[in-house]
Amino acid sequence: MDGKINYTFVTKMWQHAPPGGWYFVSLPKDMSKEIREHLKWQEEGWGRMKAIAQIGELQWDTAIWFDTKMETYLLPIKAEIRTKSNLEIDREFEMAIWV
Image (cartoon, rainbow, N blue to C red; front, side):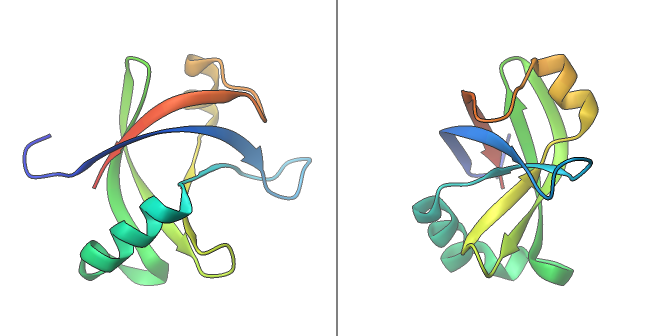
């Protein structure tokens, strides 16, 4: 990803307001702090920042949103991605993002 900064981390997926709520990954707080300090100028409305995400060999265009209550960026995980990556709530996996 030319011109983009890569971050790799181990995380767990969680669901907001189950059942039926959206699924997310929270970026580590120290990583979120670094991104916000250096790249906040790239944010669009509501703290949204374009990103590219990757889990295993699966890569997709997406965005991260800064959550002021949690003080971290959140990455939504669509059903298609959950299915293709065989993701489950609270199971650790490694992923990468480029911002």
